[in-house]
Length: 273
Image (cartoon, rainbow, N blue to C red; front, side, top):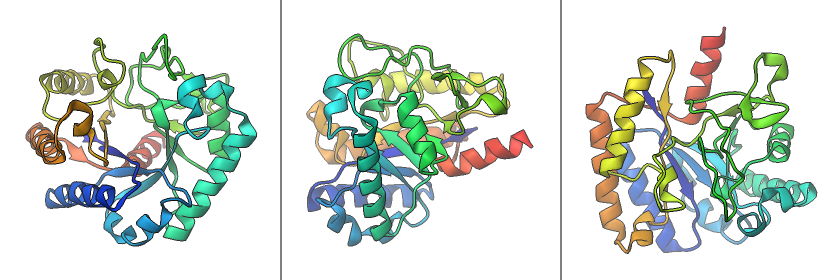
């Protein structure tokens, strides 16, 4: 069974870079490859230039908060496609200057629409991870992913990004690898992330292990942040690193194989042949 660890990288200071280094050091100690979704612009690209080599043995994807965070306030369907395209072009240019050409994408706040997927396809992205199954917040920026299937991956239909295609001719051409769903609770964000070393994480993980016996190919896709997710719970960054290590150890005991989203997509393609 596979796990694709994913980390959203939103750095704005040298301190954030140091936190990122500590996460990568931990992953390297366990020889784990991770997919890092990097948010980049002219404002912070110089920070990445100095440390681009730390991503060796890992995958670099692109992370954009569409509309300069306006998608959080209005919803992605309120952002003009032309504005999104400009953001995408600028971000790709900055990544190119650092030395990367991503094929994986994640929208900030898990914002995704048919228009955003069409744009990703135009710029030759192959993988998206901007949705979570059954995500249907009534307020806030979420796009209402209530129809997203409870699956490890699927090819969205051209008619709707949250409905699987029934044939190759009907798919949008982007492989969707959703963030692994968690049981809903009163919190608007964390139910849709796998919190390191929490009891609910272990329950959901065991649920997916059972699910893997029913599916021919399954991956668990946790999401965390490089800038100190622990701060959102009034914790210090070292505490977050400790929890992340405990999560990794637990998944190793459960015999997960850690791979990148690109690696998993290649396995999916191989199974189709």
